[in-house]
Amino acid sequence: MHLVLSADDTGATSTPVPDDGDDGTPQRARRGRPVDLVRDGARSARWTWGDTNAWYPELLAAGTRVERAHDLRLARAVLRRSALTAATPYARAPRGPWDALALVTAGANSPSAPLPEGLFDLADAARPARDASSALDPVRELRAQLEAVAAAAGPDAPGRLRLLLAAESAGALVAAEMHHAGLPWRADVHDAILSGVLGPRPRPGERPARMEELAHAVRQALDAPPTLNPDSHPDLLRAMEYAGVGARSLRKGELERLDHPVVAPLLEYKAMQRLLTANGWAWLDAWVRDGRFRTEWVVGGVVTGRWATSGGGALQLPRQVRRAVVADLGWRLVVADAAQLEPRVLAGLARDERMADAGRGVDLYAGIVASGAVASREHAKVGMLGAMYGGTTGDSAAVLPRLARAFPAAIALVERAAGAGERGEVVTTRLGRSSPPPDDAWRAAQQGAYAAGDEPAQGEASAARARSQARAWGRFTRNFVVQGTAAEWALCWLASIRRRLWELGAADDAGSAPEPFAGRPHLVFFLHDEVIVHAPAALADAAAEAVRDAAAERAAALRRLPRRLPAERRVVDDYAQAK
DNA sequence: AAATTTCGCGCG
DNA sequence: AAAGCGCGCGAAATTT
Image 1: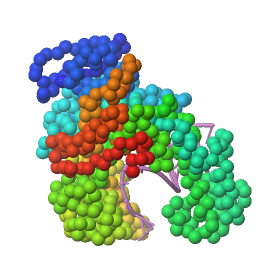
Image 2 (image 1 turned 60 degrees about the horizontal axis):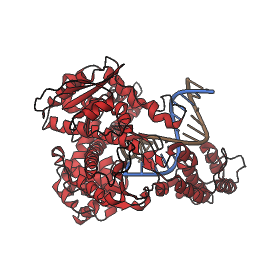
Image 3 (image 1 turned 45 degrees about the horizontal axis):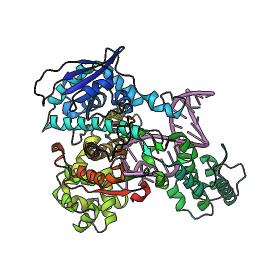
């Protein structure tokens, strides 16, 4: 049973909408405060709303968790684009107010959107209004979505899409819950890391003393004036050219290959500048409050279905500062990742039995070496990455033919996806998320490539450009099927972890505050193929087992995906201890 | 002065 | 000459 929440000026309404599994017992619509509606509703209800971010945070604040949800905005984004529903009236209808809602919400945290005054108001300000507009009828939208799913074309297409939508919505719940709980963060530990590397915190607008020294050393090595700003790329490049360093760019990889006295101090300066600007004291002030780091998790924020985040650079926390992620007193962290998720997903997607065999052990790449396909683990790794990303140079391209002979099914799958992209076609993940079509400029370039050219030379140039763009789009679609299907696997994993952790219950009665996770293990971090659970010490081992069991659980629609995908997990006190 | 682009680097 | 995928973010440069 779906219970659809809608809001108007005077309150909220929950409207039952039956689905396949219902026994037909009639239910009535109810009115009231959202939190009361949810508490009084059936526990097995699938709470359905326009946008999880518009409803769930206040429920969590009141101490109320929901078991299942259906996020109409996220579901719509999938169904409007999926190749499996492309023929349905739902997907063929012109854009409507629900699509506009998707845009507003998706863009709420983008740089173009006006930012609120305090960073900490971001979450609230970005929270979309409830679907109060009469143009947005959530009951009607839900019915349309259920119809589109039922009409999806292809083997088990409705089942796959149902799983995808359920996983996406469960992800939305997890995202709201992780924002609510926050990632445990010890500001004092972080500050000690910064002081250890950079020295004492400088006054605003000044460089740490150690960086000032390095800047001086850089100027000396280049025989440059004191006005040279090492943060200015053009200035620095000019000075380096003048000194005969021979650098074409300031990239770390290139600088490391040069033999010049400026390289060492410059690299050290750049590393410190990175730490200072990305995760320095200003970051700490802006993003850590009351021992928690809170980012905005953006479910489905990446075209492939991966999540994005907004605020604090949560998906790029450098190893350098992970020591500051420390469990509360009496609590532990369970840190787990799905080992070599993407190549294993590829093996499953392609039903490549030989690659699946190679992945029986903990290390897929070692298994590939053992199969005799390539000589070294490094070759296996760069070869597989190249196959999944479309690499055409270096070792990666060199070992590709060997991989193609050893694992023809897997390699053929990514080659087919690349070919489809080069032709401008759409590709689709295991559960039915489809890639966006290339834009008009891309199509125009492909058309123009054959029609163009008053000047033969110009025609050739534009043809070359068009081919290059075609190959680039092919690399995108090649990777889309793998990255996107891996993201689906991870979403199902996350949903299963969430359910299993809840079933573990609470370690003790942790007070009367309306806190849904008091005494309970709960998710606090998710990074593509990696999770962190914050758990009372007494439940930490059980939580780790839950994480493992969730990885071994495969929904029917994912059955071709890896049978045994090792989820490596550790119970630790801080994030840095985890690998 | 504000918005946009470029470069570089962190993460998977 | 182009160059393996997907991101977010900050500083400086550049454009409006």
